[in-house]
Amino acid sequence: MSLIVQKFGGSSVKNAERIRHVAEIIERTYQAGNDVIVVLSAQGDTTDDLIERAQEINPRPSNREMDMLLSVGEQISISLCAMELERRGLRCVSLAGWQAGVQTSAVYGEARIKRIDAERIQSELDQRRIVLVAGFQGIDRTGNITTLGRGGSDTSAVALAATFHASLCQIFTDVDGVYTTDPRLVPNAKKLSEITYDEMLELASQGAQVLHNRSVELAKKFHVNLQVVSSLEDKPGTTIKEVTKVEKTNIAGVVKDSSIARIALVGLQNNPGVAFQVFDLLSKGNINVDVILQSIGRENTKDITFTVHKKDVDQAVELLDEHKTALKFDHINTDEHIGKVSIVGMGLMSNCGVAARMFEALYEAGINIQMINTSEIRVSVLLDEADVDKAVRAIHAKFFDET
Ligand code: ASP
Ligand code: MG
Image (tube, rainbow, N blue to C red; front, side, top):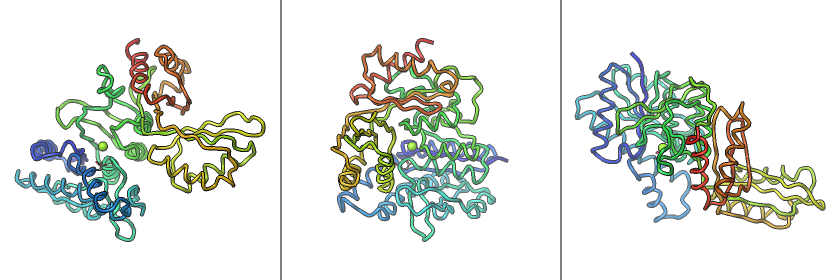
């Protein structure tokens, strides 16, 4: 007998009809003789609605109370789904994160799973119960409820799959797999039958909405057999694994991110330690920095330009301004109307012509590149926000229509 973890996203459980459908998938898996752990997200827009309700009461609620509130969404899903399984005469039990033994760090709103105490879930599985676990939540050392960050249910599922050595972890969504780019933007985007953990991780961190990036990190670390499949149609999805069969000469996908902003510190002194001071300050303020560019020094000054998430701009500027005397810069520039487009693929490692093709596509489309940033298997460009969609289409056409 094998153990399968099945995770269903918010749209897959948004109403009674969809819950019935999900229950059918679970029942089929269970009746085939498998042990089943189910992880659910909050129904539909529940999490957003809860955030709105909090805002009506207090525009700056504490992170602790936010986690207390948001954890409710997933508990609604698991109890309702368990009721449907009961109605079908199946043995099952729903468990909140803390009941399921999901131990996390003590960072509200962005907690990390540290370990899962297997005892409770194991004893339920031993009694042939289907175990439904609330995704996105856990409990910290002192017994407070924590959440894992938006989209975190994927990570709950993969962590459970790793802990219980599941033979398969299926992430059910309303798309039927991972595509070469967003099919809503490029209708002839192709579905990938498989993709490596590294490629998926880059896509997820560069803006692809399919999987929580931490879930892919965990899957890679613990060799979890991970699949993205449709909850609507019964057809093969995308498998995420260490090595894919085909030697890729092409890229795996094109992805965009419009949630970034650019900050430029102009007229910094051209001395050792300046970059350290700037980014140490930002990191202590918990502000994540992505692309960094430093200009060539002139007349003993230099500029440092970098990107942050749009939500962090005000805080970053405030922080830098507060330390203006110590950092000795002339002024700060910000631009919130930028976006990032990236290509990702193992093929980039061995083929330097790939980046050139991307730039060629942008040149032909008349799009100006503001900054470039690369990793082993990724090339990202920063563009005017208005050019982002056009850039994705041009690059996708270059790599997938011309081959
Ligand atoms: N319900 C949470 C969210 O909307 C977690 C999740 O769906 O994975 O972000
Ligand atoms: Mg999600």
